[in-house]
Image (tube, rainbow, N blue to C red; front, side, top):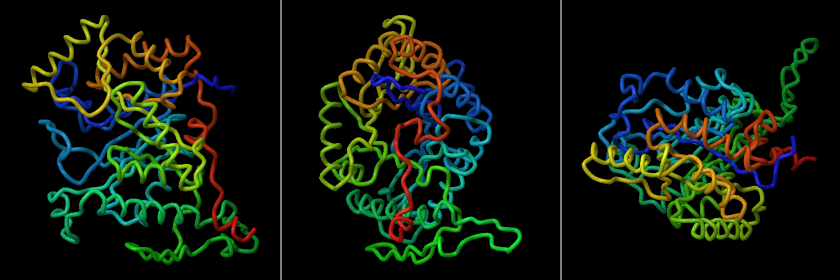
Length: 383
């Protein structure tokens, strides 16, 4: 399939009931189904019908430490992705996994497993913890500041990528006649000895369809932006407007080039809070109702679209055509209302304008994002 140079990338945040803290209390939200996996499957079906690039599930080891909300509790993002993998097709599944309290070995095999089960549609949003509540839940280290936690995340990603490479693509022989299941010369010890981790062995999971599932990083601070430039395949940015987005994208691409990476192998996506209505006034009324339930106007950081589907489609096309971003992570204020509006109103308008595809271009998330499949570093070393 030929993809228009004007085509955008669209991810969808399916965390909780939506980013607005009181979304779960509004009509139609079905609060009794917030932890029902079938509800998530229905939302993923809708996103898949719209051929969105990926859906994303947030996660943490504390009860919503970053949100002022009355909603409490979450399902495990990696396990949810594993369950949804055989029940979906085409669409990417992005699971958030913490690196501060999770060992890289565990992260590596969990994400590889999701990539196998989904036939190449897994991705990892890297998270880190700096809260005393989360630290107390584990009791194994001191509370870390953000710079320290991000530095640890950077090394954790390095270890995980080495583990993903530790099996070459053709390490599995499966020769029944000789009884050789693997070629041991093609399974490598990573022998990582860094500042925070010493990992000697190889992954126990064969190399997955994407080789390395894409790594997603939210670049919300100076340390996080440097980390994203060093390690991320997909960078999420919080912006105020198109000009701010263009500046941040240029800075991330320049920082990536400075550490020896190809900037064209990075996708920079802007976060957008989405509140849709039949008219701009109707959208504002919806948001006012949500705010009234909360008692004040609480907003996540970043750009907010409060208006019609046509206005959002025009913004997406404008920012993409002008090169301000490579795409967006859409954050429906209330999932039960805005996900349908994105799939059934915004996406058809983008397709009609030639700004979004109508089919998936390949079988993996890397295909959808236009990212090359990395070769195993160990295969290259001995070639």
